[in-house]
Amino acid sequence: MDQDRLPDPLLARLAALRAADLPVRGGRTMAYVYDSGLAGLDELAAAAQAAFAGVNGLDMTAFPSVVTLENDVVAQTARLLGGGPGTAGTFTSGGTESCLLAVLTAREHARAARGVTAPELVLPVTAHAAFHKAARLFGLTVVSVPVDPATFRVRAQDMAAALSERTALAVVSAPSYAHGVLDPVAEVAAAAAERDVLCHVDACIGGWHLGHLRLAEGHGTTAPFDLSVPGVSSLSVDLHKYAYTPKGASVLLFRDAALRRHGWFAHASWPGYPVVNATLQGTKSAGPLAAAWAVLQRVGTAGYVRLAERVHAATARLTDGIGRIDGLRVLGAPDASLVAVASTDPALHPFVLADEMRLRGWYLQPQPAFGGSPANLHLTMTAAAADPDRVDALLAELAAAAGRARRAGPPGVDPALVELAAALDPATLGPAEVALALEAAGVAADGALPARMAPVLAVLEALPAALTERLLPEVVSRLYAV
Ligand SMILES: *Cc1c(COP(=O)(O)O)cnc(C)c1O
Picture 1 (cartoon, helix red, strand yellow):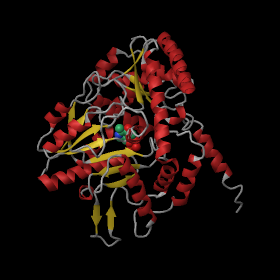
Picture 2: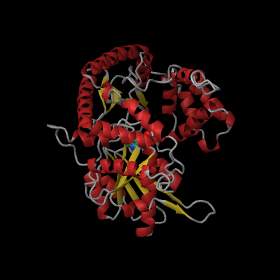
Picture 3: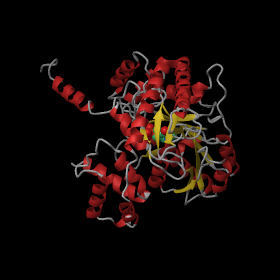
Picture 4: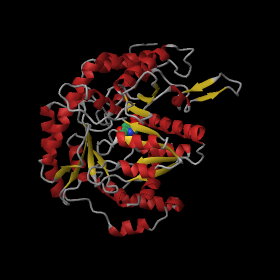
């Protein structure tokens, strides 16, 4: 076998496939990816990941290294985010799995501790979609709580009023994904504790950043949001976001091991090996855990504090600069490193602005209008994008793109189409109606999307959410045609 030549065509093919993707490094993709900009960090992470790729976290007695690595990573996370002597935690594959496990654990706890058989999950409307997924998978009823239309924070009294003897878990975000603002964690946690209800803090995206930012010298204190807050029973924080580790890394902290135990699965009633699963996965590569361990050690607390300070300053510069661009405004007052940019001019539509930016090599993530939140673009600021010059370059691009978007005008949506769609019952739509609806929205038969997404997004935004939820899987199903 020719070791030198054999892999080349395969690696070349993979590289060619990647060329069509958004870049994951360089700071111009302002959602989905996190770039520390630190020299050598990716190489270290890749080596650690490769060394542990084949190690199976399913069985910690066969692979005791995973116990050491996980205990180290969880301990470092607990120290940062208000853990005490009894704190317990679990390393998971990502934010969604952490949120799913928080809900599953709370459901089991509510059944065992309070006899709750028809559990409810109390969520601000701004809570991450992962909690709705958890409710669906684990059979909880969602109780949705509106947020303040100006600040996009939930009001503690509204959360308190939504709690009942059926509530398994109340959730707050620190911060929310869509607007980057902190819910009133302490007030909601206190109201939950008063009723003996568990309270989860979703710090998936902001926890690592805010936890280090408050250690920075001269930084005004962030409102308390972590496990040290009375009444907070669990907290999720993604390492594959602001800890800049490779994807597949999150931590779910619990106030104690007894609570954590409610979410575990043990099984000895089959002829195979005895099973204990702390997560939803069975076989799991220790690669992401080893990579996270290595990155956490290498960057260290002082390193993360510096990264958080840079990101914080850049977010302030960006927020301030956007406010000066004619026709644009920032929604709410961002508490962390996430910014939602809306328009003040009906001629300037955020989706058209996103298309204009994408044509110039910047990805800003469209967020359709929902409730009191108008259509906007989401920007995640990361360290690699945080130099003042880079922020100024982004602001200049935004100003120029806003001018072009305004001249192009907003995407037109045929009112007759919307009226027709509103009359459809998503539950009974047949394949022919689905095909017609997608064609009307501008989606090709093979699922291919046009270069300019604004017209498609505008149609989707105008449809009832239940219909969109019926149509989106059809689009994706066309892509995965096999
Ligand atoms: C990213 C995120 C999640 C889900 O995490 P994934 O890692 O994408 O599965 C949950 N909550 C918030 C606030 C997030 O930003």
